[in-house]
Image (cartoon, rainbow, N blue to C red; front, side, top):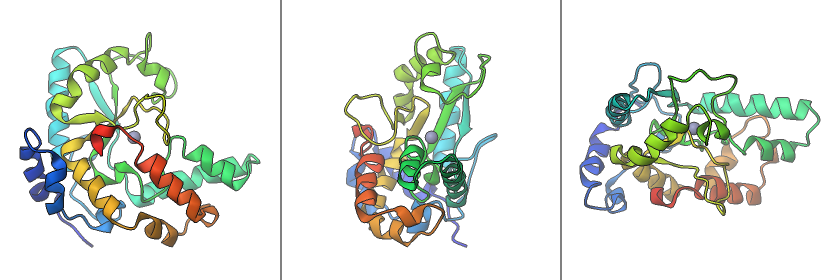
Length: 243
Ligand SMILES: [Zn+2]
């Protein structure tokens, strides 16, 4: 199994991000298809969550700073493998079609919030779903209203708006009105110094061909046009600072 740390590659970008656009450095980066699609056996760090080393270190620094301001940053989802994403996708596909939805409608419903396996940014070990561990919360935590006015994570969201970028963390699926693809996810942050070069590397691969090769429940309904739209909207229509 392929196994190596991202540390060596990403430390170059980490040092450079303050004064040179990361995209200039991305020419130097090399990520394998397996790493980009959650199929590699990468080194993972973190307590109660998993991420690649630099993301984990930066998160711990941000967590310490937030703690001083009374916020308990907590990761509810970090690294996710291809197999895990496939299980999520197939479970939802089964559920929605069992409930009577047509296959294409079921897939459209799944991709409001969940990715097609192989295309999740959680595969990279750079993206984290973050909440505040202090407030008592009823029901699901990853609900946009809970991060808005009067919600239990309102303070945390304000703190992150003011501070996250100082630690390299950016929201991916913003609430800009014209953005397509995944819905607004006020909990999903990415560690940009590593994820920008990874997205650049992913874009250089033939994502369409890679996805057409996959075989899982529901994938037989993917047309070329559907996958092209998915790449444009769901992979690339994100916070423009991350492109
Ligand atoms: Zn997420």
